[in-house]
Length: 262
Image (cartoon, rainbow, N blue to C red; front, side, top):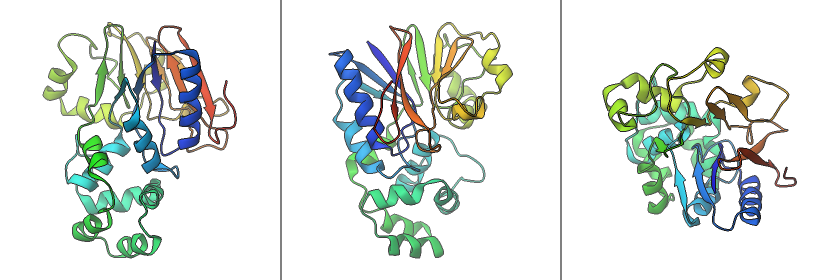
């Protein structure tokens, strides 16, 4: 069966529990991840190590992954103004959990603080030296969309006015900077979630915590021909990590501390 998993954000405990529970129910699962593997949570390096060890796993790029890629390689899928170069991207994401990612790679706090006070492309590059090449390659090669015959997975948003079938996603993205930006950074409005869409398959997304639509519920947001799966594992005290089984049209959730599953 195919399982689509929401934003992890460096939260190793719920990921480990969720994968165990999936394996207990499904001896040969296919895993598709919605992106945002790093930042916010304490275990980004360990999360990526675990993801790289998985069999039958596919990954799409999240906006946090794209900006981490920019810091590591100087390249990204799509610029996000004003975060179009290394220094402003570093400064901005230090407010959104990058510090935790750096610590997970064994980078000393004193060095992080020194670079924070005097950032430059060179000092950031030296600070990031402990990030292994396997991880750098993982982030550099992440695609932005996973397409199956019956569904597709993207991190943030696919326009509710654009077909999600033929022509290919790649062709449409190549023609439109707006689509390229939305697929990593866009957010659905509630009217867009419930509106009919010209998609010939169901869309699964992360990026926007479900608390933006239902503040007290850590449940997937189910819309017209789409599902939102970021159940706030790293950003809410009651958050959790969610995996949606496409074949069963149901989901599993693991608590952020890895202490419960439902």
